[in-house]
Amino acid sequence: MRVAAGGGGMERNPSELPGMRRNPWVLKTPDGKTEYRAFRDVTLDPPSLVVLAGRSELRYRLRCLEDLHEMLKEHGGWMPLGGAGEKEQPEAGSVEAWARARGNPVGGWYGLKEGRRGNFATYVAPIMEILHLAEVQHTPHGGRMRAV
Image 1 (cartoon, one colour):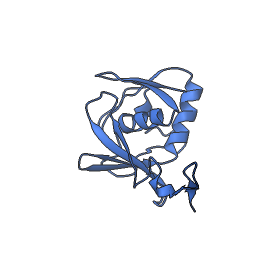
Image 2: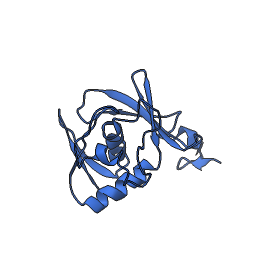
Image 3: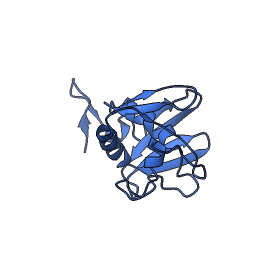
Image 4: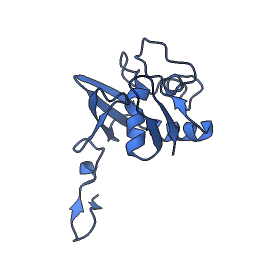
């Protein structure tokens, strides 16, 4: 399947669209310190949001984008990011805590790779922002987000 790129009859392969493996987003963490790449991969089981940060590869369930947007809309205001590694305790009431909670839509972790399931809020928040699903407050420490 090919998707028109717009105008002039030119066509663009969907795998080359922004946010796909061949054309990943290049983003910075909310604190502005770390650059990383991210892309959607619907060929993985389950479909995943892949984050490449330095030599680390993290994977989150792709549905996290829709689920997080819905939760933020229901929350109705700013929510702390609370980014934390898998073995660290996230801030209560934060996006990071929600991404691990048994009460979220997947019943626990959105992260898929054992040992690398944390830092959900750190990497997913800027993706939500680039997709115009959320506004992210970029600060040296902490940060917060809300649905758009």
